[in-house]
Length: 293
Image 1 (cartoon, one colour):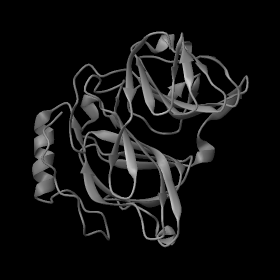
Image 2 (image 1 turned 90 degrees about the vertical axis):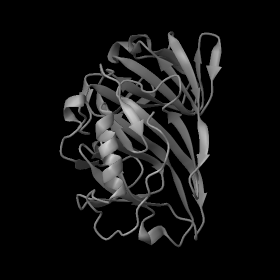
Image 3 (image 1 turned 45 degrees about the vertical axis):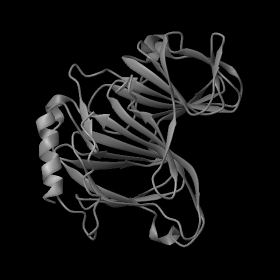
């Protein structure tokens, strides 16, 4: 990746029973293509009395992508969806004008030791689709395009690249790619990418020029066409990016929009609890105080 413009270190935060590493947004880079938020969850060892319990909370103006390496999460939303996500599958929830969901440890795992490890990602919607009807799509791991080239394993988790297309129904030109290699070798995939591009190192390391980069770092490039690097043996990296939007997108809590008035309305609606409800759920996460970013 010969045009690295920014290196972002993962910033850890405790959200209850496990740690997350915030990767985006960052003060010097608010988005990479349409990607506006990336959290690395875990890896967390949860005992028989520790569980993930994120009560109902709202979203507008974005799609969320949940991708697990280990563990399991039960997703429930205001559309009536109730579905367990397991490693390698994709939960893709498009909030549009407004959706509410909860994320919890499945009932059958709540009294046993368990692991939780994965990525949670927000992708902003184009301005003209920010008020679309909400929807939810689940894609099983076996349906994610996967292939090998020269001993390197690839998965196209979302979007389009390499002449392939993921079944995840995205709303703007983007890509989210997994690359695994058991042997050290050079990777040159810039010709298959476009727009802005970021690289997250999950395990192992990569080398660019004389510099070596280790896990829990994101490297940002402004020209995806120059995405070239040396991957170390037993490494896993994720490439994400795409075409940036012409207009700025603002973030307040779980709300994303190019129109601050829509965010203000969502704040009022959530305070007044006029968002749609998650069936069977009575708890909710209260509105926080921070300013729009």
